[in-house]
Length: 119
Image 1 (cartoon, rainbow, N blue to C red):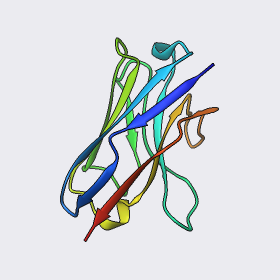
Image 2 (spheres, rainbow, N blue to C red):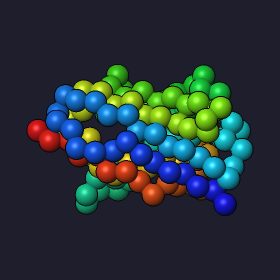
Image 3 (spheres, rainbow, N blue to C red):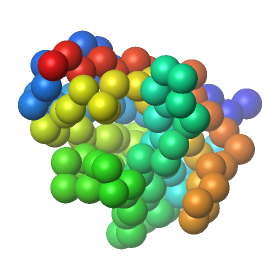
Image 4 (cartoon, rainbow, N blue to C red):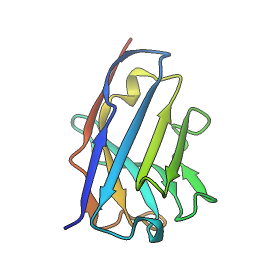
């Protein structure tokens, strides 16, 4: 059974930082690309960041480029999202996703972690 468990969300002031973690189990993690998506109230879920199996290739949504960094530790079966210079518009539930391809999420999702940025 595949499980993706996010952690690290919370309340932060604008300009602050948070680091999200996603611990994966039940799948050959090092064979999977991983991604982060987010969903704000009243909006559709949107792509945030992608990392390939080795960590050598990353992509970001234009809205977070230069502020967010995705990384992974295959020895720990964990993917991270370092979020700096947070803005109020980053407020959303952030979801970890396993197996994304260009423009499309994969089949496995975490339960989500809330990030709230106060202005």
